[in-house]
Length: 186
Image (cartoon, rainbow, N blue to C red; front, side, top):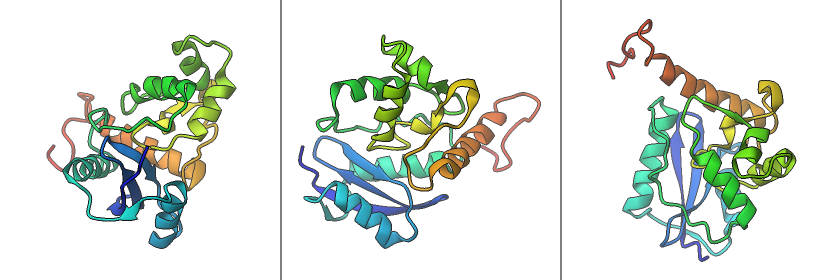
């Protein structure tokens, strides 16, 4: 895998980073303490990448991420990923996790069962802890047993996980007849 470029972009949760190859997105970085810290964290993961203007498919991915974090109901599965650097077990975990719709969750144990490895909840947790594409592979939608938050490897830890889940949950509220349309008219 050759990561070609990286860029920073603004979202409702702060300045995020994204990296890509010709094949797809190679990584996403949640906001650090400041923009430089976010850029450095991404550059450490992808030392061959350099800052550049994102190509059209990356601009589309950025727009989709921003929209989701503004409350849009999008599962981001149309965003192309470059999985060349992902171990096979992790890829299976990411495939199941990516299929979890916004506003819904699974437990680590349920993901383990879905990949045919019941009892591998801890290994699922480790794989999600190595997730290079938080938000695109929505590891924030995977909870510990009993609905507990569990861990979150993205910058900001569990506070970021809670914040993203809250954004997605608010978007789902407007699908219920009791709440009607969204305040922004969407």
